[in-house]
Image (cartoon, rainbow, N blue to C red; front, side, top):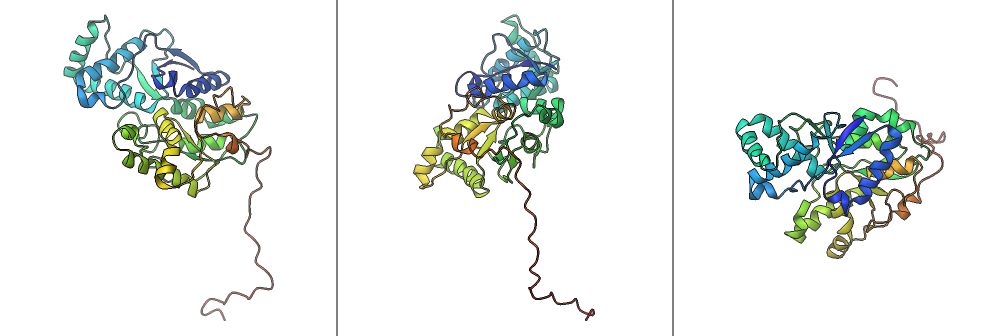
Length: 319
């Protein structure tokens, strides 16, 4: 399975563990990534509010470069949710609007590039594991199941947005839940799984940002999650790096590690925590990982009624 690969800025710095773990687990699953050469930033989320045409052109440059890859399989994979949305949105609107496509290609021509909307299928990394590899194939490579580890699957607000080749239910996604179960983890009912982490709100209004983060941490803690598993560098950064600030602001005491789904797959495949980049997070994952058991927990059945208990009253008319 061959794909073009757009890492994005975060995976070279603060989210390097995401990139490292993704590359490691791709190999045993037969996934072959070809990185876009000379790629540039996708512009994150703010640039569209400042200047739309330059924003589209900036992103389209990456799409144009991706078409030059020999082994892209006609597809471009983005691990970062913001990058995925921006690349998908640009490809979508260049197909929908010939006027926009002409103006963007006029800008690209200055660099000797051109992009035809629809030339590539833009997809998020999670979808590759879910739909192309499949849960059974993922499970078949597991050598160290994550038995006993309770995880809260956090999708964030971007990859579930409708309109860009959605691969999961936009209201109640379950693909990450199923993927975690395939590697032996215990998935908790994380009802805020698609709520926003606040994005760059920490730079605009800390009280607002801290409240958005607090809600997510509380929801995971309420269900006794040992860790929150995510697929977005911004989500990971906010919930991890600002968890201490949230505790100070609200007087709480959350210590929930925030890990990437590829890191947990890697652990289940026998890679060491260090090989998966675990240890670089602000909130240590060590206590959570210590809860992984060698054997699957025995199912807890319903307790039998005490024979000495009073009998239930018979239904009306059955006396």
